[in-house]
Amino acid sequence: MQFVEELAQLRLRAVEAGSTVLRFSRGPIDKLDIDLPHQAAVDDRFWGLMRAIGEDHRPDEVSDRIAESVAKLVNAFQSAAPAVIVAGGTRGEVQINSATTHAETWLSKRVNSGVVMTAAGRLEKVDLRSHEFRLRDDVDNTVDLRRVKNDAGAAQLVGQWVMAHGTGILHASGRLLALDSVQVEHVDDPAAEYLGSRVVPLAEILASAPGPDPDGGIDLTDEEFEAFLEAARS
Image 1: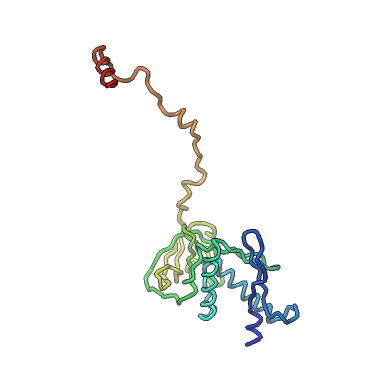
Image 2 (image 1 turned 90 degrees about the horizontal axis):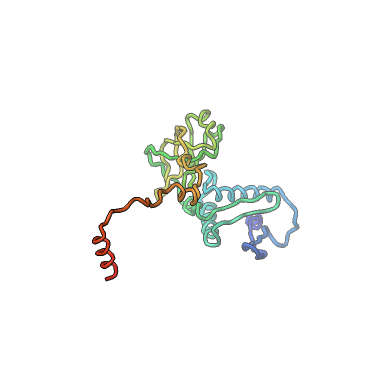
């Protein structure tokens, strides 16, 4: 247990210029820099958690104790910057948007509402083996879709806007996290009518606008015109 705890330790090593780069080192400081099987397992678990933070999704296998620590890390990210990039070696980068991550995703258990609910968004994840999909709504929140009934047909809709109906699984705060026993159907993208719209230049708008009519206006007699001028000068 002590070996695993030492292996998982993170230490701030440097702060670099730019958009404030924080560099960390992991593991005990008095050990050789040799990759071990246990170290690879810790790395896999760490990067899996980083990707889950970026997706604002708590995997089912994450224990409450680990989830509590991850929630603290999410709070730290949100306090530090609006956007965080976690990068390391051959693992690539994980981008985390503080505005679309929620500490409460990790803090409490999900509650099955027992009520059929609906979610709409772009279908962005399809897993035919587990029958679990995921959509992202128009305010960038994700909703997990579990046990999708029409999975084969719904899989053809990946990247498109869909409507999903299923039993709602809520966070304690009331936020919809997932739908269970789901039926998915295609719907039109609500922004489609605005996509590709031509921006009309100001010159074109002015050219098409009616100008003053030189023959328009009201007819005044000489006396009425003199009265108007006198009123204007007073």
